[in-house]
Image 1 (cartoon, rainbow, N blue to C red):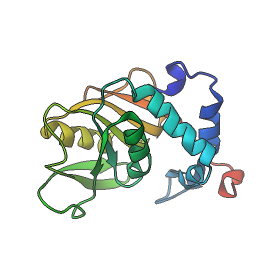
Image 2 (image 1 turned 180 degrees about the vertical axis):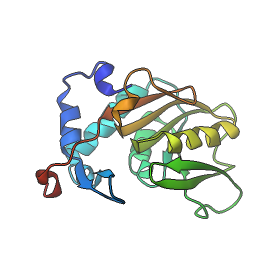
Image 3 (image 1 turned 180 degrees about the horizontal axis):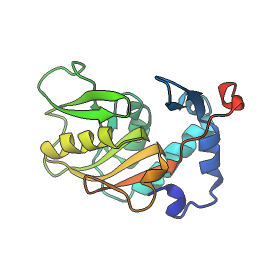
Length: 194
């Protein structure tokens, strides 16, 4: 579900977030309209809006674990986790974590990849939120759900800053709700210079 479908219709923070995201055409390959959140991070007001909206949504859901998908989930996940009193668990690319890990392979919109998680990071029956910057196919979030559930966590919801319009409404990934702040922006000449 998009934030505008859940009580934030007309909220000026959503426009500020959307306007702060730069669109890079044909990156990393032809046909992809890359939603570059770097410019969002350079705007402290818009960045704070992202964190505040997610914190407002999750602060009363008894979430004990926020899992961030490498790499951009690492940017949004920790401040949300701190604000709601939860721990942060990084879901990493292969070979980046020491110790015992479990892994899950998934398909991207332009290839495939794998995520790993430390087996010691999650305790059975913890309530988890998964955060990433963008959902395009749902493959990365589905792999994240699999990892956390294999470790015994209960995934409460997945959250993304940007989501394709196909995820509007009561969309579920592997039976879990998805909450998205804004739709992808279209390319225009101005986005390259904002």
